[in-house]
Amino acid sequence: MAQSEQEILEGLANIVNEETGLDVGDVQLDKSFTDDLDIDSLSMMTIVVNAEEAFGVRIPDDEVKNLTTVGDAVRFIQSAQG
Figure 1 (cartoon, rainbow, N blue to C red):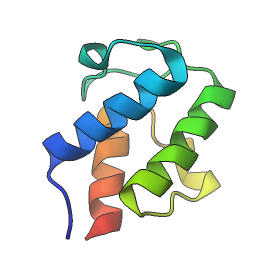
Figure 2 (cartoon, rainbow, N blue to C red):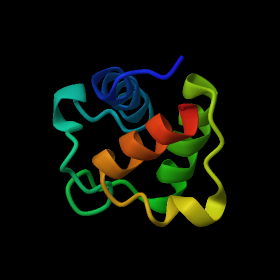
Figure 3 (cartoon, rainbow, N blue to C red):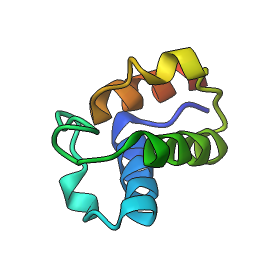
Figure 4 (spheres, rainbow, N blue to C red):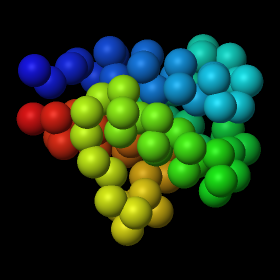
């Protein structure tokens, strides 16, 4: 069963927090992973792997570069679950 945007955002915020130490409240839909949250490519790959496990989806490597904002990732996960 697909999760809501809010449920995915909360789960993703927890994953980002575990990887980077960023406050979960800082992880908002309009935030850029690199520009706003200062997440490097290595951390991003870890976040992607953890998100795949947590949400039961597959995020192809060539798709990761398109996930520039938290909202992009949330929408991708939501569509992959459906």
